[in-house]
Image (cartoon, rainbow, N blue to C red; front, side, top):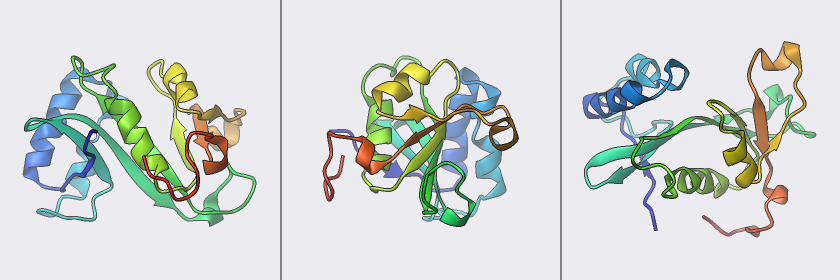
Amino acid sequence: MLKIERLLINFKTLEEFKRFKEYGMQELSMLEDLQDNIIENDSTSPFYGIYFGDKLVARMSLYQVNGGTNPYFDQRQDFLELWKLEVLPGYQNNGYGKALVDFAKSFRMPIRTNSRMKSADFWDKMNFEPVKYDMARDKGENPYIWHPDMDGEMTSGETA
């Protein structure tokens, strides 16, 4: 079983994120997010990752959003935004991305994400559904949503 870790906001994590920037698209870069919030060893980081040995090989950011600003779900409720999920080349197709998504699902809250870089098939496999595009709301994004009731593989109280 893969261990998901909350990443500390520190200079070591900043260096690890630079490795992702070498391979990923600019839109997935978390360097600016991290630099804007850097406080040595801040444990309230929205960043999560998976290490292979001492190398960060997969990461995402996960933010809780107040339901008052929720245009994606039928009811006004708090939800999670899962952003910038990325797995380094050479580590892809080994379950790291799925492990991060399952970790987010374990909070049993609705999740919104944005399908990028030809990732729609991945989100479909994770039981996310595309949202009907609304130009004013989505502003060029490709939102996908997941709700705990949509996932038959987990029951209330289970964790990934």
